[in-house]
Structures are given as structure tokens and as C-alpha cells.
Image (cartoon, rainbow, N blue to C red; front, top):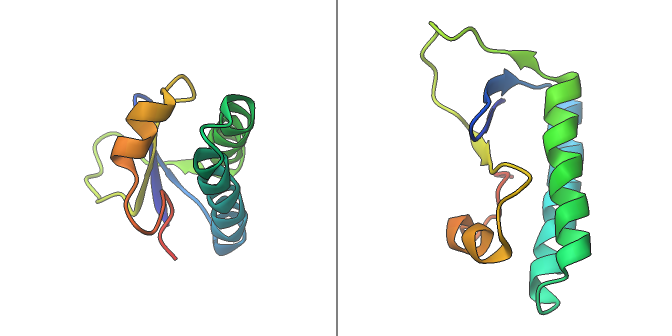
Length: 93
């Protein structure tokens, strides 16, 4: 799967990472449902970003491929994230 971290670039991650991203995406969604649990939201989003950075292989800048998933930067606000989310969260699947 190709994951874009907004403002940083694209990374290719394996299925095991996608499974963990889906878990974190569910936790992030729960944070947003709980009247905006700011601490939980920041923690889970930072974990997602770090997981992709630490396990993903950067996609070369000259290689044009669509992103399967877009993760906002860790400093995004709850309001901005809610606007970005679709029905399936940040990570499809």
C-alpha cells in the first residue's frame, strides 16, 4: 500500500503495517467520537505517522503513483481531521 504523509511524501508499507494502521485508525475514530479527545487523538495520529516513517520505504520523488491512504501531519487540528475523514476513516479496509 502507498501511504502519503501530508507535507512529507509517499511511503510503501507492507500488509502487516496496514493492519496496525487500521487498528490506530479505529482508535483515532473513537477519539473523535468522544467529544474530541485531544490527547488521545494526538497520540494515535503521532503513532500512525511514526509507524509509516519507521517501517515504510520512501517512494522516489520522480515516481508518480497514487496514494491509497493519506495521513495528515501530526499537528492537524481535530476540526481539520474531521473534515478529511470519509466513512472508512483514513485507512481503507
